[in-house]
Amino acid sequence: MLFEAKVGLARATAVTSRTTGRGGGTTLPGRLLLRLQADALQRLAERLPKGAAVVSATNGKTTTAKMAASILSPPLRLCRNAAGANLASGVASAMLRGEDADLGLFEVDEAALTAVAEALAPRALVLGNLFRDQLDRYGELELIAAGWRDLVTKLGTATTLVSNADDPLVAEMRKTGLYTLLLPKSLGGPELPYVEAMELVEQVSRADGSAEVEVANPGAGIAREHLPRIFDRFYRPSSSREGSAAGSGLGLAIVKSIAELHGGRVGVRSEPGLETAFILSLPAARGV
Image (tube, rainbow, N blue to C red; front, side, top):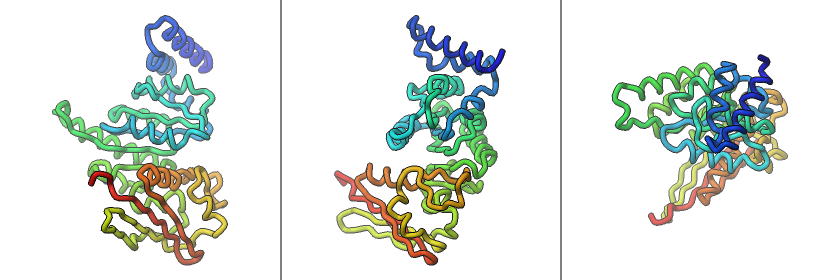
């Protein structure tokens, strides 16, 4: 059976499931397609014009995916498993529904992440926490962490890694050579690869509880005409990077959005041939 026929059968299963009231079509269609075509996730992912982003964690992956969706859409049309079906079957079912999407944004169960992410080859991989709870009695946590480390190595620099630096198991994965966002190097990683190094030059805490952090990049700097758009989504100032998978033009836009969600702001100044500095300002926490 040709792949398109298998896809059609799986979509028909989704319609039947919904119309008969026996399900929402969030799992069964994908399960059927994966049974018929083992590499269906990879084939469907190849149809997403802007690729896929994957979020995984023991806690917080749904909230993180929702935040990312609010940043990316609009203007992008997203394919999401928003109903919470976060195994391979749920991701496949979401892609069956999202045939007109620009970008796939999927939350994935931490134990299922390795197989799903290897198939999707995501442009961005967001790793939250790995939490040991009462069900983890036989070392599952260490096994999952080992699988994540192997996955990060396999994906290589074509995937931007966004990791939770507060979780030691996750934070150590930045040593694989992928860029790690939400750490100082993030401001210059895949978005500004011509930056030679990162240096935290100033961190100020004020009496009112607000804080300002300045991070400087010694290097080529950024041309003045690019500065007004440097925080725009998908804006990549270096023409030499066109066609490169190393940067998506999203990192600095995400930094700006997160800062503004917390009532803060982010700015930039640059001296070509000398350095570029990013300044993050955050207000005092309410009720503290």
